[in-house]
Length: 205
Image (cartoon, rainbow, N blue to C red; front, side, top):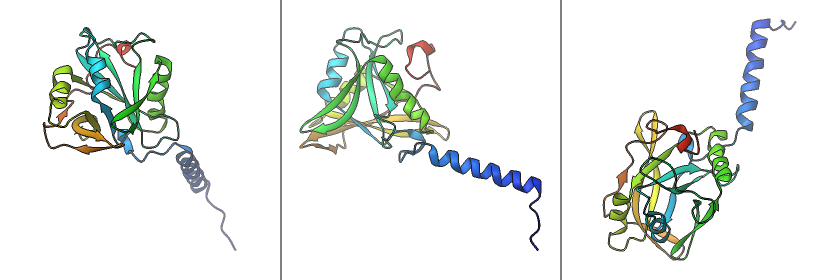
Protein backbone atom coordinates (compact mmCIF):
# COMPACT_ATOMS: atom_id res chain seq x y z
CA UNK A 1 0.00 0.00 0.00
CA UNK A 2 1.38 3.41 -1.02
CA UNK A 3 1.94 5.87 1.76
CA UNK A 4 0.60 9.39 1.28
CA UNK A 5 3.24 12.08 0.66
CA UNK A 6 3.58 14.35 3.71
CA UNK A 7 2.37 17.89 3.10
CA UNK A 8 5.82 19.39 3.76
CA UNK A 9 7.41 16.99 1.26
CA UNK A 10 4.75 17.83 -1.33
CA UNK A 11 5.41 21.54 -0.89
CA UNK A 12 9.16 20.99 -1.32
CA UNK A 13 8.66 19.02 -4.56
CA UNK A 14 6.25 21.65 -5.87
CA UNK A 15 8.78 24.46 -5.24
CA UNK A 16 11.49 22.46 -6.98
CA UNK A 17 9.26 22.02 -10.02
CA UNK A 18 8.58 25.75 -10.18
CA UNK A 19 12.30 26.51 -9.92
CA UNK A 20 13.14 24.13 -12.77
CA UNK A 21 10.38 25.63 -14.90
CA UNK A 22 11.59 29.19 -14.35
CA UNK A 23 15.18 28.22 -15.15
CA UNK A 24 14.17 26.48 -18.35
CA UNK A 25 12.33 29.58 -19.53
CA UNK A 26 15.19 31.99 -18.80
CA UNK A 27 17.26 33.10 -21.77
CA UNK A 28 20.48 31.12 -21.77
CA UNK A 29 23.93 32.63 -22.18
CA UNK A 30 27.05 30.80 -23.29
CA UNK A 31 28.94 33.83 -22.08
CA UNK A 32 28.01 33.15 -18.46
CA UNK A 33 27.72 36.00 -15.97
CA UNK A 34 29.89 38.31 -18.08
CA UNK A 35 27.11 38.66 -20.66
CA UNK A 36 29.36 38.53 -23.74
CA UNK A 37 32.30 36.56 -25.10
CA UNK A 38 34.09 39.25 -27.10
CA UNK A 39 33.51 42.35 -29.22
CA UNK A 40 35.67 43.81 -32.00
CA UNK A 41 35.94 47.54 -32.76
CA UNK A 42 37.93 48.91 -35.67
CA UNK A 43 40.28 51.86 -35.78
CA UNK A 44 38.11 53.98 -38.08
CA UNK A 45 35.08 53.96 -35.77
CA UNK A 46 37.11 54.49 -32.61
CA UNK A 47 38.92 57.45 -34.15
CA UNK A 48 35.61 58.97 -35.24
CA UNK A 49 34.37 58.78 -31.65
CA UNK A 50 37.63 60.07 -30.14
CA UNK A 51 38.01 62.91 -32.64
CA UNK A 52 35.11 64.72 -31.01
CA UNK A 53 36.81 67.51 -29.02
CA UNK A 54 34.57 66.79 -26.03
CA UNK A 55 35.56 63.13 -25.82
CA UNK A 56 37.91 62.12 -23.00
CA UNK A 57 37.04 58.43 -22.67
CA UNK A 58 35.23 55.75 -24.62
CA UNK A 59 32.57 53.83 -22.70
CA UNK A 60 31.59 50.26 -23.55
CA UNK A 61 28.51 48.32 -22.40
CA UNK A 62 27.97 44.58 -22.65
CA UNK A 63 24.79 44.00 -24.65
CA UNK A 64 22.76 41.52 -26.68
CA UNK A 65 21.62 42.11 -30.24
CA UNK A 66 18.42 40.13 -29.60
CA UNK A 67 16.98 37.95 -26.85
CA UNK A 68 18.38 34.86 -28.63
CA UNK A 69 21.89 36.32 -28.97
CA UNK A 70 23.54 34.13 -26.33
CA UNK A 71 27.09 35.17 -27.24
CA UNK A 72 26.48 38.90 -26.75
CA UNK A 73 28.61 41.81 -27.88
CA UNK A 74 29.36 45.38 -26.77
CA UNK A 75 28.46 48.91 -27.81
CA UNK A 76 30.57 52.06 -27.65
CA UNK A 77 29.96 55.76 -27.00
CA UNK A 78 32.21 58.74 -26.36
CA UNK A 79 32.12 60.34 -22.91
CA UNK A 80 32.75 63.92 -21.77
CA UNK A 81 34.85 64.96 -18.79
CA UNK A 82 31.68 65.27 -16.64
CA UNK A 83 30.74 61.64 -17.37
CA UNK A 84 27.87 62.37 -19.76
CA UNK A 85 27.70 60.50 -23.04
CA UNK A 86 28.22 62.24 -26.37
CA UNK A 87 24.89 61.30 -27.94
CA UNK A 88 22.56 63.42 -30.05
CA UNK A 89 20.54 60.82 -31.95
CA UNK A 90 21.84 61.92 -35.36
CA UNK A 91 25.59 62.23 -35.90
CA UNK A 92 26.42 60.67 -32.52
CA UNK A 93 24.66 57.40 -31.74
CA UNK A 94 25.51 54.23 -29.85
CA UNK A 95 27.64 51.91 -32.03
CA UNK A 96 27.04 48.21 -31.41
CA UNK A 97 29.68 45.84 -32.79
CA UNK A 98 27.98 43.25 -34.97
CA UNK A 99 30.44 41.39 -37.21
CA UNK A 100 33.62 41.71 -39.24
CA UNK A 101 33.46 42.26 -42.98
CA UNK A 102 36.74 42.35 -44.88
CA UNK A 103 39.10 44.63 -42.98
CA UNK A 104 36.50 46.49 -40.94
CA UNK A 105 33.65 46.01 -38.51
CA UNK A 106 29.96 46.34 -39.28
CA UNK A 107 28.06 48.23 -36.58
CA UNK A 108 24.42 48.59 -35.67
CA UNK A 109 23.68 52.24 -34.88
CA UNK A 110 21.26 52.55 -31.98
CA UNK A 111 19.14 55.37 -30.66
CA UNK A 112 19.12 55.62 -26.88
CA UNK A 113 15.90 53.62 -26.25
CA UNK A 114 17.23 50.74 -28.35
CA UNK A 115 20.61 50.90 -26.60
CA UNK A 116 18.87 50.70 -23.21
CA UNK A 117 16.88 47.70 -24.46
CA UNK A 118 20.11 45.99 -25.58
CA UNK A 119 21.49 46.42 -22.04
CA UNK A 120 18.25 45.13 -20.54
CA UNK A 121 18.53 41.92 -22.56
CA UNK A 122 21.70 41.15 -20.59
CA UNK A 123 19.76 41.42 -17.34
CA UNK A 124 16.89 39.31 -18.69
CA UNK A 125 19.39 36.56 -19.49
CA UNK A 126 20.52 36.56 -15.86
CA UNK A 127 23.94 38.05 -16.60
CA UNK A 128 25.56 41.15 -15.09
CA UNK A 129 25.03 44.43 -16.96
CA UNK A 130 28.06 46.70 -16.64
CA UNK A 131 30.13 49.30 -18.46
CA UNK A 132 33.83 50.09 -18.74
CA UNK A 133 35.74 53.18 -19.84
CA UNK A 134 39.12 53.55 -21.51
CA UNK A 135 40.87 56.88 -21.97
CA UNK A 136 41.63 58.20 -25.43
CA UNK A 137 45.32 57.91 -24.59
CA UNK A 138 45.02 54.21 -23.76
CA UNK A 139 42.99 53.40 -26.88
CA UNK A 140 45.29 55.43 -29.13
CA UNK A 141 48.35 53.66 -27.68
CA UNK A 142 46.95 50.28 -28.71
CA UNK A 143 45.98 51.48 -32.17
CA UNK A 144 49.49 52.89 -32.68
CA UNK A 145 50.97 49.40 -32.55
CA UNK A 146 52.47 47.81 -35.64
CA UNK A 147 49.77 46.20 -37.82
CA UNK A 148 47.06 47.11 -35.29
CA UNK A 149 43.83 48.40 -36.83
CA UNK A 150 41.34 47.49 -34.14
CA UNK A 151 40.76 46.28 -30.61
CA UNK A 152 39.15 43.25 -29.04
CA UNK A 153 37.16 43.58 -25.82
CA UNK A 154 36.89 40.53 -23.59
CA UNK A 155 35.33 40.13 -20.14
CA UNK A 156 37.60 39.54 -17.18
CA UNK A 157 37.23 39.27 -13.43
CA UNK A 158 38.46 42.31 -11.53
CA UNK A 159 37.85 40.35 -8.33
CA UNK A 160 35.78 37.27 -7.48
CA UNK A 161 32.50 39.19 -7.65
CA UNK A 162 33.20 41.94 -10.20
CA UNK A 163 33.28 41.78 -13.99
CA UNK A 164 35.35 44.21 -16.03
CA UNK A 165 36.74 44.35 -19.58
CA UNK A 166 40.19 44.01 -21.07
CA UNK A 167 41.11 45.69 -24.36
CA UNK A 168 43.58 43.93 -26.66
CA UNK A 169 45.17 45.00 -29.97
CA UNK A 170 44.16 43.08 -33.09
CA UNK A 171 44.69 43.06 -36.83
CA UNK A 172 41.41 42.91 -38.74
CA UNK A 173 41.60 41.40 -42.24
CA UNK A 174 39.72 39.07 -44.57
CA UNK A 175 36.63 38.92 -42.38
CA UNK A 176 38.47 37.87 -39.22
CA UNK A 177 41.01 39.13 -36.70
CA UNK A 178 44.41 38.19 -35.37
CA UNK A 179 45.49 38.86 -31.81
CA UNK A 180 48.68 40.90 -31.54
CA UNK A 181 51.26 40.48 -28.79
CA UNK A 182 52.01 44.22 -28.61
CA UNK A 183 51.27 46.81 -27.40
CA UNK A 184 50.27 45.35 -24.01
CA UNK A 185 46.55 44.96 -23.36
CA UNK A 186 44.83 47.29 -20.89
CA UNK A 187 42.16 46.51 -18.31
CA UNK A 188 39.46 48.81 -16.97
CA UNK A 189 40.07 49.01 -13.22
CA UNK A 190 36.90 50.92 -12.32
CA UNK A 191 33.90 49.28 -14.01
CA UNK A 192 30.39 50.50 -13.33
CA UNK A 193 28.21 49.63 -11.34
CA UNK A 194 31.07 49.25 -8.84
CA UNK A 195 32.55 52.64 -9.70
CA UNK A 196 30.03 55.06 -11.20
CA UNK A 197 29.04 58.67 -11.48
CA UNK A 198 25.39 59.79 -11.37
CA UNK A 199 23.01 57.05 -12.52
CA UNK A 200 21.54 59.36 -15.16
CA UNK A 201 24.86 59.24 -17.03
CA UNK A 202 24.49 55.52 -17.81
CA UNK A 203 22.23 53.41 -20.01
CA UNK A 204 21.85 50.53 -17.59
CA UNK A 205 21.35 52.19 -14.22
